[in-house]
Length: 194
Length: 188
Image (cartoon, rainbow over all chains, first blue to last red):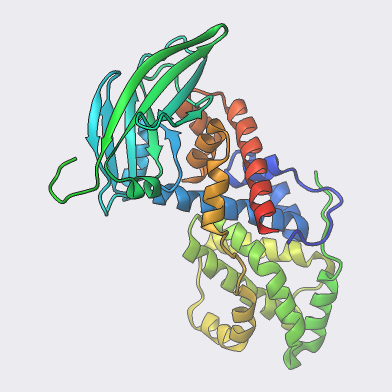
């Protein structure tokens, strides 16, 4: 897969920067010249592009959970994806579902992030007590929400169930709860409006 | 800036195609197409950001290259890669299609091109990729999804997430390395 050995392989970070248009024109031309004459580096770039295409496909199908931003979700909608959105304030709950046509389900979790050093999220099943902790989320301290995209495959398999999300500010000496959000999930029924 | 590690056989391939001329060295032509089709496609995707346009570029550039080799226009055999890259650049700049002439050349080289472009970009197993993405640290997953969903540079992703471009590059690099290792481990 990697082709002939290259005496001076281009680092992955530089191939990525080239692919994303971050390099100056002259540097990009150098990378291009090298890649064109080098089977190893062209294979590395090809693998990077395949990873990118795969990530795009998984994101478009909503089959991975991730913390995103409102602008990113709007971009997905502008690209034609059907996005189901829920908005919750701390301490509130929502009746939710996933429709057959939904490509993505996202929850806007509002909270006050000013001064928060590290943000963790705990996803829990209140009945069984099972928990999943998502550590050190990417978030904008100046924003008043994070957007959690749920794995659509998981949601489609989930029957009637309650799931709870807790946002925690983690700092030296402990952690502080920013909000608890409750999702009362049910299977989609046409016209349910959930 | 970089030492170009051109494949040792590029010049030899060009020489064989030129020497054969109208008699055609089908094996050499097929090998040239197999070798350069993925690179031309990457160039097309990078500059045109469109699958169909990139596929057209592959065909156009390979057609022009083969014809110029056969007719003896290319003299510096060891600079074959540079010649093809130059042809890519010029074709993208021109955006031109030469109608009937292209049809005639295509008729001549169609079988060679068909075999060259097969399997040039085999997709990754999406289930495997999903599993590997799920196992990434949260920040890396967010940055990779927001980067590659629409090929966004670090400054744009950083502005959205409240991170510096440099920080995004570090997170992105770690994420790609981890994802690549995971996919390759599961493949092997």
